[in-house]
Image 1: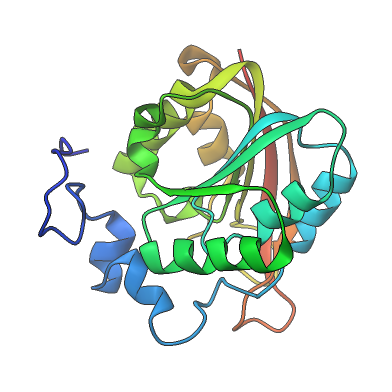
Image 2: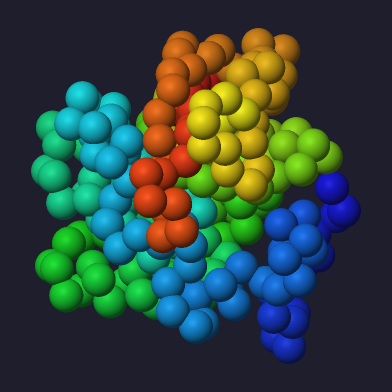
Length: 223
């Protein structure tokens, strides 16, 4: 990955480099929220994340990396789960963050949303017991994945958990950025300080697929 520079006042990227997805789409992530909901913004938490939360998948300080308009993080924060600490959602899209903050205020939910580069999470200066990635990993190309996983490692406590919900390369409905089991195993391997506990089939709901898209839900431990 190219080296990220400091923040520039007149730089819409705030000093970061455009991601592979932004280059492919020809627009910044923030632009996805300018003309109505983005395809992945379904206006409610992903059902897979709701099920994961109800099964006790979130504890301690929690980070939602690439939170968008905040529905997943807001759902988790509102549950009052035993042992759940402060919840932080981060994204590079300021428009989405503004929407997330308004939802939190309107719903009376105690939660924090902040602008942050997913490739530079160490700059948060914080550690988390649980990290959620819902739909971010699958937008990274091969060169970006190493940097992104290293960034996750920098903020995940030892024995902490990362949950990744991403498009799958298996199933009748395959999303635009399919990921294989082998790619998940290669990205989160023991040599880089990870152990995959489970990878199971799931679905990601979108605004443009009636029955959602085939996905993986991976639970990964920081070792």
